[in-house]
Amino acid sequence: MSKFKVLTIGHQLRNKIVAGYGTEVDESQLMGNADALVKAGFIEALELDSNDADLDKLGFKELVSFAKLNEVNVDGLKSKSAVIAAIDAHLNELEVAGAVVVETKETE
Image 1 (tube, helix red, strand yellow):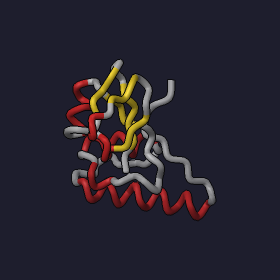
Image 2 (cartoon, rainbow, N blue to C red):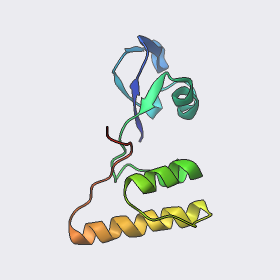
Image 3 (cartoon, one colour):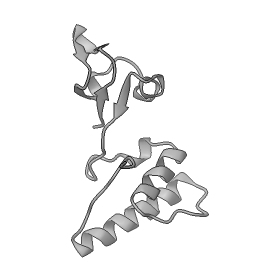
Image 4 (cartoon, helix red, strand yellow):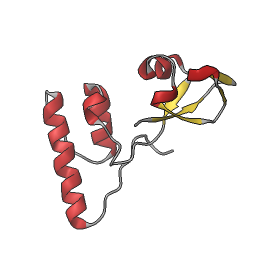
């Protein structure tokens, strides 16, 4: 399940719970669409764990960004399924090598 960090002073969750700035919440706790809340600036997505990454839920641009952050070559791939296959193949290669590190956002 995806995790998010609250970016506002207070954000209403399910069951009349209010989460404060910096609180980590699960997607299941959110009222409303997580993507819309991220776009509005209320929350931000936290790093995806390789076991928790549900690539099917990501859009094409998000998948390409995820792939590039993890040094997966997806140049020329036009479909979501092709990008997912390239990511999976790259992760399998890393697992065989014994070094799986997955990043979801650029470091400064």
